[in-house]
Image (cartoon, rainbow, N blue to C red):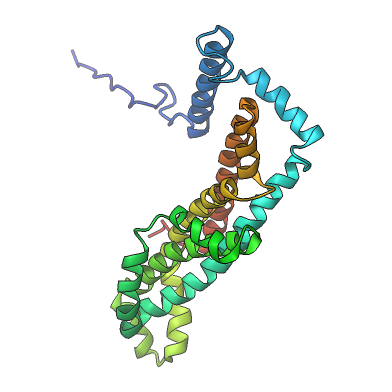
Length: 273
């Protein structure tokens, strides 16, 4: 009699269809489990409202903030202020960082001149520059934007330089064989080949820029999500603190998603090799 061996389906695979369990479904189940645990521990008294507000309390407070705003400004006004500061500094720092990084990766002399400077600055946490920003530029918008621009520059320049320096020599030799000028080589060979590395730096820079603006608003601001969280904490308004933190996480997730979609559009060849 022939023995039939029944193969066991891999973990995460439906035995009947042999298709992977959808990742979206797994993510939704995970979020649902977190919400269920949160509901239970807050509504059964395991954790009190001063430790962790109930989901109902957060929803109620969130609706109040949408309707009445906070400290003389609407909730959307606080969000818009933080986003404007972040994106302004991010764009300025990223553009400068990408240009400098690409040139440094392409030119050995500039790379040698830039490397010790970046090696010194890179280990310094961006938050450490907040007192200097306040000292030189005050509590206005300029200091916050410059702080975010410096943060963005630090991470985009390194990745752009790495991407440009890592272009295979075969590409450059092929371009030379075809009679391509140095300028054409830079824009048609170096820049496209460095794009994946550039986007890696942009994602890191954007996440840190969003974190730094909130930290800067904690120190000195009259508007923004960092200001909202700081003021709510001073008055022991715990639901508002949690709402501010949740909004920071959601907006950060959306910003990263937008950048990932842009990367997919511009670096469409990635992962097809």
